[in-house]
Length: 279
Image 1 (cartoon, rainbow, N blue to C red):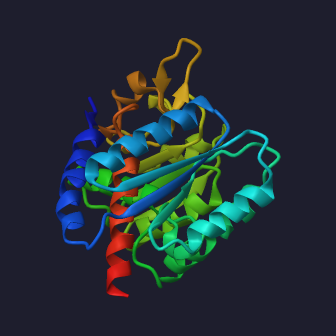
Image 2: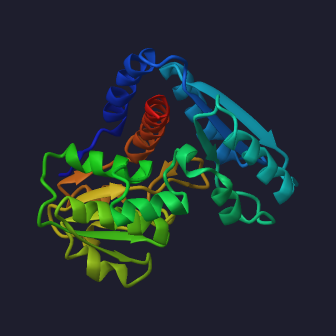
Image 3: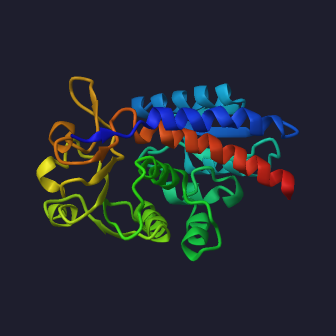
């Protein structure tokens, strides 16, 4: 029976350490978040981020835009944040409405204020070894794996996902820890790769896609998926009931990757503020 990796406890420990670091700064770090439209999931995520930021002592600013906002207006607002010394870190809550082009908007952020770490310049720096900090989501996954006490060295890892930016950074981070990763798309062929893996990270956006029969006995499974079912319940990309019988460790949904992602977001805000004081 798999042991659950308690993301809530790990995240709470990270968040408890932040006020002490913030107290050493000359001012409270500032996080500005852009929210477009009224997507229920995005509304929830931003609410959780805002509450956690304020609890930690981070100044949180949320700017809302209507569903029909145009590209030019968003780019102009981001440019104002880029030059505002009170804004240490910035976040655009995705997804954006279809009429907006996400990539040019993300690229409008100055890399130094990109709190998620997925700006093209920041990912390029990480992949080339010029930047030691991985994107927050990737670092959160690494810390969840580390919490098992199982060294990554020489382990095989399979990532089931489609986002090349995310998978490239996670593969690189896993290699730095001595693992042998590969990425497969979330389709009927992923089972061959997951059956051979000591570690499986799945971010497919498909509820209960990964089942126990897809796994090598004793595998560590990190479930990044968050999916709402018609009955209102929240599940991951893993069929928890069957996977628990095969895996050795599993992140629950909710309570696994989600809390860690928010904790890493807050830690990155403080890191950016600390770097600004050194410069």
